[in-house]
Image 1: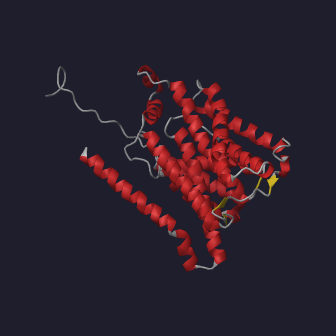
Image 2: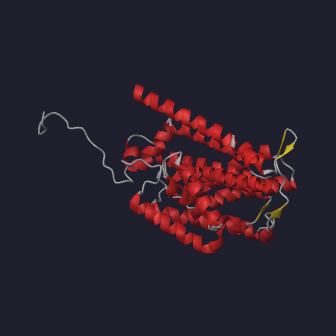
Image 3: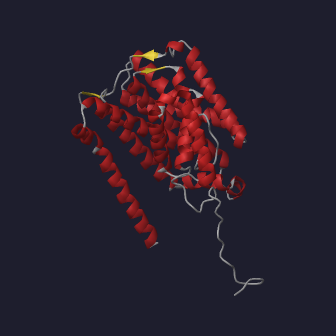
Length: 336
């Protein structure tokens, strides 16, 4: 018990050191470089933190409950369009829209999960991928979403008289949302709900035989993952100031999936590592155009061969090929 306590204390100190380091990024860039370079790097940092939360929301579904979702881009789009429509047409505050967009995406996540409760593996992947494409096509054709022209002039959030259009201000918005996501998710994973998700991932039949309401917890898992995708979509819309349907294609969903595969499914730190690697590769290899996706594919194939559990995954996990060690039992047919 003391060992677990010491381990938690070490992780807590590492977490707080990471938070302090992230808070120091904007002033350090201001000291080291001119504004244009600082703004460019801060925009990259914003993208990393945004995708870390988005990948984390997908990791909750794929990594902790064992469901296979490929439709996270659709939930992301719901949050972004809800924010854009309500802020431009009704003037709703950004801070009010954050939970509203999360609830809107969570509701869509519930509607997607209900007819797919009996599906697993590739069948569930196809349904979620189709749902994401349906959301994108509706956004591309509906008049309320601006159709193919999208929605322009999405107002920036205001806080204490500061207009958060500057990257150094928006940096802290994504940072706070990421910290809030990690805190809430870590608390839930340590609760009865989180243990139910993990039991479903390990063996759904065994979990059901032990009294776990698998249908309820699988739907709840989808709602939670979709909620955070909607929240980060709400933050994304004012950040880019313009959204249209091509920003939420299946490529976006596969990019997010690549982040958790590379970083490590079923870990809180994995999506952060994956989003950092994929974002840096995206920006540094942009001159290659669509050929950079070939590099993504090669990295994923290499990860499947060399480290299928991901960079942050446990070495002795089932994904890594590890086996559960059982203690020998004393009695008939066993050595004393």
